[in-house]
Image 1 (spheres, rainbow, N blue to C red):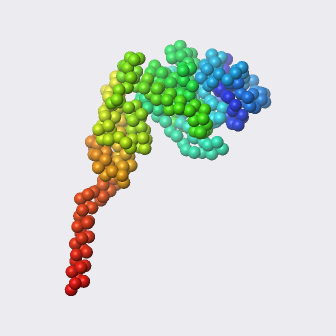
Image 2: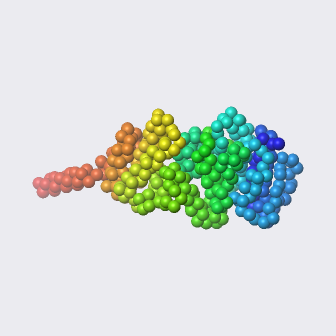
Image 3: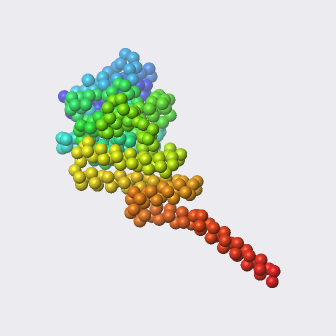
Length: 378
């Protein structure tokens, strides 16, 4: 039996498929099977797969297009490996990806899921940016409340433990099935990301929008609500009320400034209070030691104060009063932020552009003009 099953589901993926398959077949770790579910492709996908003469490739053809989530669940049922590694048919694994993830799982028996950092590439394979993710379990468990801190093509997990304790992908989700599964795993098992760039993720936002439409936003939002609701101990019928806006909470935590420009100071304060409340319940839910909880809360306070400072800079040329209020709130959360360069620069800008300074400048200019008139008259 292979140690690892690399699970790939492909639908009309002929453009990048060969490069993706090659990145698996050239891994330094060789004890794996590459299980490819051809999900009813109508292009040259199947012929590309059949062109390989490698016994590690297992091809399974769906008679019709079932969709990604059912195809992945089908693959998980058929997988023979102890560990499941995911990869999409347009992404690329670095040569040592499998070796490093297997080594980590074999030396960390408490970890059920391992991911990695990644590089974003465009349709031509050109580097867009390098992206890091939280690596330790506590930080991942916190960040997953607001976004998905794993890349689907970069994960490896223990098949039997996940199957027995968690279950496979929820087929109610057609786009964010991975996000839903990962947050369920984090509730029961420790998780991690390797701080190495082991995957190249191909970015094509237009393709996602064309394929999934509003689901791209709707499904992750539902998962965030489920996740935070579970953490806070809500029952199934409880929903968010008017004082809690998960979108605004997420936007503030992630620093998505454009989405927050319509909020007032009271709303910002409410959001901050909600995040701190969530963290209180987070520490209790995961039974964090007092010292770890204290340290993590300080990290959250620093993050929030930095986001408020960023918002203050964003509003500097639009609304000076809002900028002052956000600046003061950032300092109130974390007074030591005053010692940072960006806070000092903003403070100087605020003073320089304040009403008092402007009025002094106006009066001074008026006096200079009057003096010039007196000299001219003499």
